[in-house]
Amino acid sequence: MQGTRNGQDGRLAEASWWDRTAPGRSGAPRSDHYQIRSDLSLDDTRLYAGHQDLMYREYMKRLGSLRLRTPPVLDVMMFAKRQDYLDTLRTRFGISGEGSGGMFFISPNGAALAYYTEGVSEARVKHVIQHEGFHQVAHAYFGSDLPPWLNEGLAEFFGEALVVGNDVVLGQSRPTVIGTVADAARQRKHIDFFDVLDMTGEQWNANLRSGDASLQYNQSWSMVHFLVLGDGGRYQQAFEGLLRLLNQGVPAIPAFEQAFGLNDPQDVHEFQERWRAFAQSMEPSPFAAAMERMEFLAEGMLALQGKGTKEQPWPTTLDELRERLREIDFEFDQAAHGYRRRLSSKSDLLFQIPGATPKDDPTAQPTAGFRIVPVDPSKANGKKRGSAEAVPAPPTIETFGVEPCDLRVEWGTTRDGLLAWRMVTGGRWSGKGK
Image (cartoon, rainbow, N blue to C red):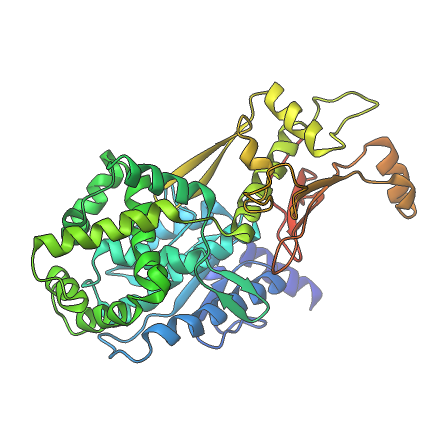
């Protein structure tokens, strides 16, 4: 019997990802709302399935009162390996997954939310779930009638949400996105409102190939943020009216004009000016900024591997980390939907938490920030102590004073023995080194 079972396991390992993850097999993962195929560990599958269920409930708070246009397609495919993700999308669905970390797709052969976890931090995977998961649910209520700026802007509005326990905190904003939009608005290099509102899916995708995708996504997110939360929530009721009109099939521009009471081009221009003022006044959310910058610091620490001395292989203070990253001109590209943001060690802001120093007293001690905590090999147990003394681990990177909770980067190794980090609490090992 044991030999038969081993033979079955061997054939299963050689089968395609699709065959290996067939529903109904023993130990298959479960979700409250989704049909899941996964070759992740059971613990990781449960982690992401739970996150998807939490976000589904959040989407339904906003969309559940609308009429369903089509039956919802709530299939999810979780891939451990990027190559399996690419191969399955291409061979089974005729979809190219190149350049993506995940997507909601619709094809003649089926539709699903798909993503992979190889080399991707838990925070990134959850961002994909939150962003692409909105596209998946929204399709059932709007079909293809949700204009691309609103579809992508809302998806990123949910993608940037902060999840604390079972609470989803919307309205988070990252410094790099705010800065990009504020600069464009200040210099009047933003996309004109009429052009945004009238942009078709074909035009949107053409701009991804040849235009400024970064501004396109960032401005759409900023416009949604303004309509939901701007001016003390002044436009929130009208925004909900816009969604109802689009759900009923009213074309995009008439729906926008009707919902917000815009009767002529001058009204639209004045509305755009209110958004421009809002975009230039936005402040980044400290927690979202901390997460963005923590990833930069962790990847920077990885880049220093092997570049220290035997006596001092790793930086021991934040100032030392900053100086050593500048010595190697460290830059890091943070991938987002349709574009990348390049972060450079030349920027002092990446080593700070926004809003931590009072504006009226720049000399005051910051109330929040980052700090480096070197590892003490003497506190390791048993065999780990000798290993830690021979090859010191990178120091812990942590925040202090950040609400609603602090963050910490800890170090370990992948299954392949590569140095990797995770953002605590709870996390997937991310990054790699020799």
